[in-house]
Length: 379
Image 1 (tube, rainbow, N blue to C red):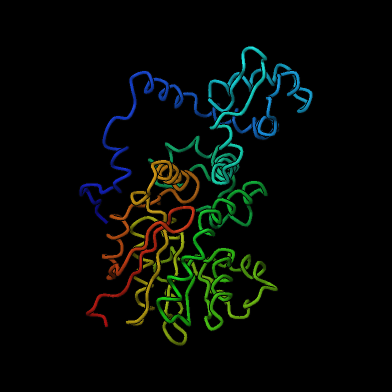
Image 2 (spheres, rainbow, N blue to C red; image 1 turned 90 degrees about the vertical axis):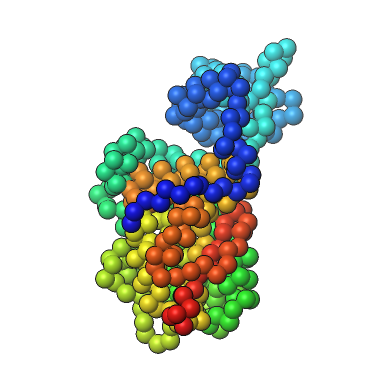
């Protein structure tokens, strides 16, 4: 696929931030130094959480002296002093110079209490931190060179079941956090606007969406399409849940362009792809969508749920998403990213499909759902 060099389109909120200089010279210099020291800013802040210092400060109205922090955490005075002084400059704590008491800043509060920030921090440390050291190699080679830190797999997905416990836990927590909050709205879009009795859940992972579907709709039957090892994990995960008898697994390597979607019986009413296509290059997306198209009837719809970074309402969300692209580069597969609308639309067109409607602002992660159908001449 040839690169698309058309003009970038951004949401109005992102245009305000990304098209004009926002910082003074002094602020820009500070930002540059922040970038230069970014790795240790991250680790010091992570340790402020892990040692419990931020939690103690968050619970203290009057603040705490360094001596009190040492006593309650078991840290040496040297360790506490290093972390607290760094955190003052990072901006997660404040100090009263008259009483020498430390308190939590607004940034520190979010670091401590914001669920998204905590999930992102664990994901960055447990899954990405060591692998990002090989980001340059990954960008140049188009392969997940940082994944070698964990094992010799072509992509992270083959290795998910074998990752160390902390990495596996943080990976799934990250993956589910941004999709789970979208499920209630997504269920209404899929089931209330169309009569769906059969659904393919492509890249269904542990079966969380499939369980939501069979609980929401007593008629629907769900087929999960994923790697064979993921299908085994899914089967274990859904055991004992209501409606599990209406969920089946279909092992498939979706990177194999010769592997068709299952075609037994009637065509599916809906094909669901949640946070899935961002796991593939654009050429691979075209291949997957083309094979999905072959499994569709005229009434079938593909529902693509993605956090398209150019459609975000807040620049912080766009920041998180574009940084996540570099996880895909170094760890996941070496050739995919968090896409924008323009890229996804191009893949849809090249697969012989068209976008019928786009729903925005879904869930905590501000997902979009692209409803896709076949061209009229296929009907």
